[in-house]
Image (cartoon, one colour):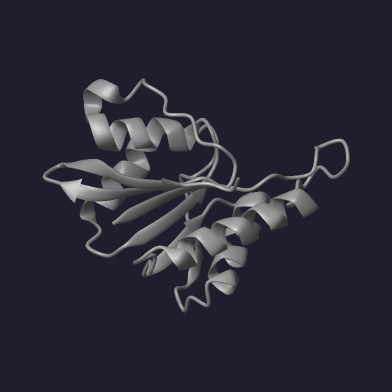
Length: 151
């Protein structure tokens, strides 16, 4: 299973150029943790995140909020404008459950590529902040299983 997760709400760049999570963002992660606790099976082997603060903080709060022992790993290729084909290739070789915390438009393009294959590479599936899309492997492609997001 692959879990694609958009980072939670961050402060505006004018307030802090590093753009850490806002109070609202921390609350969103808490709400998503509650939803994931109530469901079955969110147990990734690793939680990957981009180098941006809002992605790292979302990953760390998810791990802590769910009591996961999965390492939180800085992973190249998860920036907002990175090529999703790079991460799609890495995920194709993975045999473990992985959570990927990232940004739009990258996540939306990655989801379209994983689900639709190369024909869907230019398409875009919109992710709400703190949204989680679970995908299971179906041959060389992936199938959406469920979607969780903060209310």
